[in-house]
Length: 394
Image 1 (cartoon, helix red, strand yellow):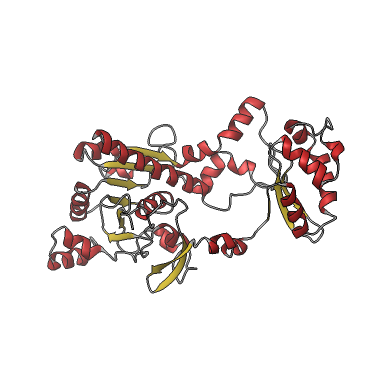
Image 2: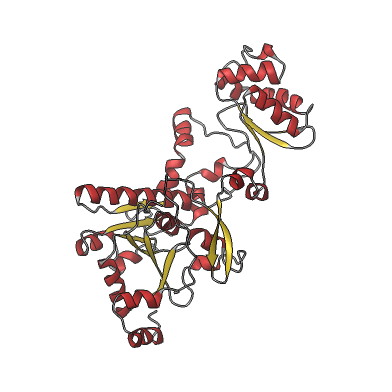
């Protein structure tokens, strides 16, 4: 097996919840050593979000495999001494502390760059470290609301939260790619550059299309459930047996094929109401009625088979249980065992496959599991470690 790309890279993280842990777990997937610094007496509060995975939090086991856990009171003098020793030997430092906390601890990017010129500091914040909202706390759903995402999600009658932590995930992805870019820049130029990502601006990037549509079109895209706001037909329809099938027409060739070979209505190809993408959106209700009538004559499986024959992309509308049991995941060997404290779980492999490289999928740590080993590496004796533990520093 080829050596993992980030073998030899050390990451120290003061992280909690989702965004920063998602970034560092992906670095660990590629072979980086990630030392997760947690609070004594409980650790990352995401450990207690739920207890559904063999007594562990579903969030925590997703985000924290392959890491080493060190419990440390970084506000204490002796705890800070340990952290400084770790940073002196680290390549990357990641933190998503509460607004202003990193600066108060001297762990902001400017302070760290001055003390450790080769260190890459990465800050994950809610609304940025400057500007009028720099001091505001931000959680995923708050950011979904502030970016307008919630206003686009749901039905005409009611808005809805996106069902995953999409703002956190967006920020974690940009932190991950930003860190990789900074590591490459340091390797090629010798300059270590700080990385900063906010949840608001990360999700704002993902909101660009509806933002541009609204700014230049004058009105926001409508909120229409599983239908696509600016493409038609594109959405889920109900077949005769109650099954839901989603399909999409992306171009005029597909539109003609749908009319002629699925709907049996070649006259619709050049109908002025439907001849262009914009016209189909403007006359969506009339088009939906025609499609609903056709769906009402066949079961879900028959509809999908007919659409496949026409070359129209389609899929049944799965629940999470159907996703977990999906044949693509099974046949492509995407599930792998990961050890937990006292148990074993099945976890999905990272989605980016590198030829000849097996992703790292090591255990999810218990809080403080590696504290003694890490402190021993730093030269602490057993007696010193016992004293730190007795005084609540670790």
